[in-house]
Amino acid sequence: MDSERCEELRQVLEERRKVVVAALRDGMKVVRTEHGAVARENVLDDVEVSEAEVQGDLELAIVELRSEMLTRIDEALARLAQGVYGDCFACGAEISEKRLRAMPFAVRCRDCEEAWELAERKSRPNRRRAGSLFMDVSA
Image (cartoon, rainbow, N blue to C red; front, side, top):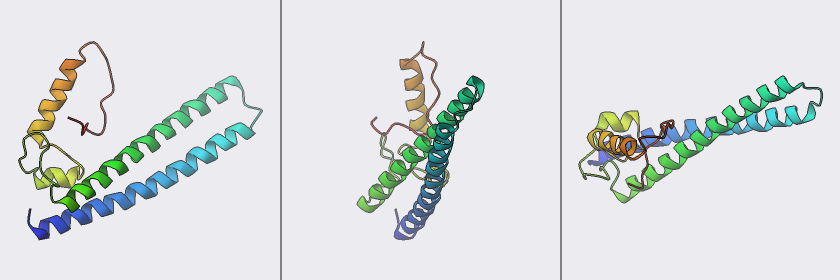
């Protein structure tokens, strides 16, 4: 990867990191504020408590997803510093610039990612599960 492309992708990663960090901070504030408000409100009925718990769970899930995304971005920045960013973990080919711009923390090219996702689905045929927004880098 040439130095110009490397610098451009580093900037994309850094910008995405800033956005995720800000969203993560905002999400944590909301979770803390909402949970604190629910705890202080002793006049809620069962339905209101249930709704507040569901909302809190959703907000916490979003915070967890953003935290996972931040970890993936940091890992991508480390790979960039090591000179291996943009190389597919599975086949070693260069991941397309279009894919890296869309998902700058991608670790597999599109073809390998599709094959990995298909293998994952086949390995768990009876289990309905929500797909992760992020791919597994342990493969």
